[in-house]
Length: 540
Image (tube, rainbow, N blue to C red):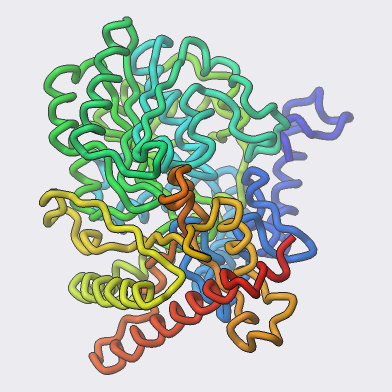
């Protein structure tokens, strides 16, 4: 419910209005858990009543029979995470009876901040956490803080703009990225947020060229340095959004490029890392924060929490600067609530409305259950399991007559100890071929949608076509006929590893084979859908 959507007879009395809002919020907590998990996000989270899934093919209740390898896009909630969300709701209700809903909710979210930092191996006193409904919302938070740090004259340089979220082109300039905010405010997509857009401009740099070829790392580095240098020469400060990692699991620019930027323009460039995929090692994450970078993370990609759940990690050394800000952008009030901001930021958070986003909170509670379970698995097993799964997926795709695996990003020795198990490949992107040509982006989208439901004429293909499969959404690459115009993706996520874990090597091997058999089933359905006779059955 919008902050302004209150009963007319109480709207003129602030005390009565607060009581009414608190009572309404308490009543909201008694809604079905599936309903709460779907609240407090933008329209991408809305569930179609007919199909029971959102735009990503995900359900808001556990669906263990689905073949899901879609952690680069979104994942349905697990039973374990669903139970954690239910327990968290009960605990909040008990606390609210004792101390009031506002205090209870603030305390619960603050505890969640500490748990996230502990899971990610971050010092409690050196990092602050700003929660948000999605990584896209967190980009607006980063832009707001960069403007507070520098000045309204700001240029956002987006590295790998073709490999990040679709809303980034708008958030980089301080524009609305959808038609409804997570707080329920109707807005116009592509129009500026009040008080945040101003003199902000953006520069979008692509990883892939128009032919579908990835640019060499040296060329990407040169392009990044050139964009930063030109922006500064024009009198602008820079918010540099770097990628670690992209929809294809790629990282840009290189560490050497970042070192050069720091040595030349440390006081004119603020770096924010798009780590929404969360496919980086914990030491690398700490290193980014130690260098003064802000980092955008989510619990809903690699960690397989329910979509959406975003957060901006901010080095504590910067917090005092931000907390002394005397103004906030009025448009940001439609995207953020007081509880999203750290309790230690007393002055800044007091300028945001008191408004409990139960959906955002419960999705993060669910995500934290997945993160906790993942890091309880021994590190050596996490790495060996990801390596074994990766070898198996590459072998399955290589044996397919219809699929062509995209090579991984060459990192020239950059992947070291700070990547931990994330030095292993976790996103397997592939083109789909038919009659000697790569399928178009539209055709890939049809296959993606058809995978997520039983085919209309499943009897002709038996069990293969009847399986419900969720994989990564298509990613467009280039336009020439001899290059794939789009790729689909099969991914490894945290839940895959926790489901495979066993201290008994024999059990662990059988668990790995079970998951690879599921991948084979997904590939078989893709092959059937791509076959000449299938004609994308059941897809409009």
